[in-house]
Image (tube, rainbow, N blue to C red; front, side, top):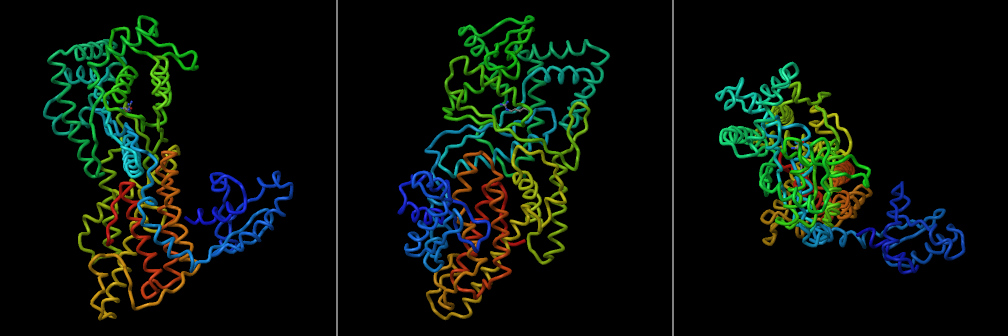
Length: 574
Ligand code: ARG
């Protein structure tokens, strides 16, 4: 809104395009200089004058606009908004649906491939990132006019299941697998790889079991189902705590009967070539290594399954756009899959997009399944909650529902600690850091939100005491109509800065969608909490006038909304 107001003033006096003007505006480095600054360099050629000269003339013109003050500073026109004129409209704007939920998606259907852990293997940190980033994108797209469809593409197929079965047949124990599905599966997996180093026949055995599985052998099928069931049980516990559900859980196995059609399609297009007995699609034109489609023994492979999956999402799920929230290490895989689709004449391959993210380590530990050294995510979640509980017990010993709040804060710290980073960055995750109530953390944002709620409660209680008027409905509907008891006191610099910060929400939400980058909106939440805390330190809020109360309430609503989009709870007390 601020930008629009400033832009209108410039547009009134130049013949520039609105889009161009909007993109040129800058926020001055010092708030005293102005609320917005317009650089005049682009106009220099057109007017054959120096940008400085133009800035002076333009400032003069803008200065005559109602509610604005303008001055030239070098090549810039600095514009200051008259607060008393603009505060009410800017405050009102903040709760409008078109501000909070801009329709940029126009009902486009976006299938989001997210989480997608592998059966019989630990839920990795990469899967956690995919889950958390994917779920945030899902909610954000849903709020901006898209129709998001989430799919958990379980890794429940492939040669590794042959190995798993082979290992289980040799050394496995049903009871142990029931009791600790993933731990036990992992042990078998590790042992398989250790022994296979000096006994190559094991690998053949594994391959043979997978071949049997792919051809519907009953024993293989039953063992596989058992692995899937026990692993899913363990994953579901984690999803529940992260408060995540999926529109579809369709593992790779789902595409088993759709694979031959893919192979046939590629063959019909003349794309399949033999290479060492295997079938590949050459991608020389794209300067990519060939994509393996069928192995020597006739079994399918990861890319083949992703081809079938993409076609299914396009044809059956009617996806307009296909997103894959998967670690950056799979870049080549997706390049190949999308390139094969393109070669096969699937024009919609353009709408497929890998949404990669960087590696995350917990306190320096990386995961390596092969060696069996793994950070157990459930333990990480438990530890985060325990630490949150300890902090809350110390800060607010009288808080009711400490346990539930600790869960919200602990889990929230992990989610936010992930999302606040540009997704491509590598993250060295420290629980201690993620849980501080004063840093750039989820708990800090949650705490700021709770603090505002309690301030508002105090203000409401005060209003109830001070006012005998029967039409004071404040306590009932939770929103602040007239308070009657105080006059509108002007916002100070800190309050004005906070209002301008809230005003950025719309633009930041759109940027989040354009870049598929939840960190943009997570950063917005931190900046907003910080702006509020400066406001709180500098200006009276309770008894500070209607605008300040309204501003505080808008801030709380916006923080709660943003936390919700990111997947965090916003408790009213902490
Ligand atoms: N299960 C795979 C892994 O853990 C990730 C799957 C990603 N999605 C996909 N459509 N390939 O590496």
